[in-house]
Image 1 (cartoon, rainbow, N blue to C red):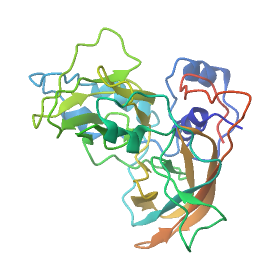
Image 2: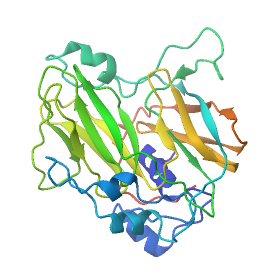
Image 3: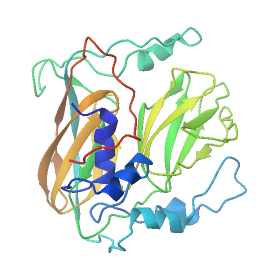
Image 4: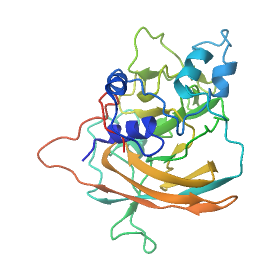
Length: 316
């Protein structure tokens, strides 16, 4: 089975049916810089164009020209036609999520979110797509397959909220060029940090204060952590196109603004080593229901590897 990070990287690199990467593309993947294809790439996010606020503490704006070169190298026209929407539930079957060895002594309530390798609900009495299926939180959902144009990112930032014991989300997706805004609603100081990183200034998120602004410097997989809370690790994926999201605690997701025509809805999870997908035909002003199922199988003879977005992969 593919490792979960490789599947996510394939979604990042390939927005439509892809072929085997060339040697040049493989080198880029090895360097953790994903090349943009002609399908599904996006223009610079508004944040990239407007993020010149050098006076904002902890904000490191990305050069707009650099982002444009990554996300829309072919200078494709922006999609301006009618759109549809996709929503549904991501489910998981198979082995239950194993417990994590984290220390929750300072905040026992954190165990309800961070105490297992992934968050899953109880099997419903009716309506599950497969026997024993449970709603899966924090799964990645990505729409790929459109081509000949790009879909612009509309939002400057993706908000991440700290509430009491930890981040509310365990998986965050954003479009390369957007910034993370980490808002602290708890009563304690937090020190959010995006890894891997080097020579970073310690950032302090004050209780009820202004959000900390963090810019991922390249597309790929990152970890949002906190210096004093080892259990609080958020998987962050910076994509080269904007049609992506992650599921909520009930396994639900919704993606708006999907171009008309044939697309593929893909899903994976940072801690479940497989993916699922389905092709659909998007109709104008229609909300298409798409439920997908991931299967979790724990290998008894080996520990599951942590997602590594730097490893090369063959796109789907």
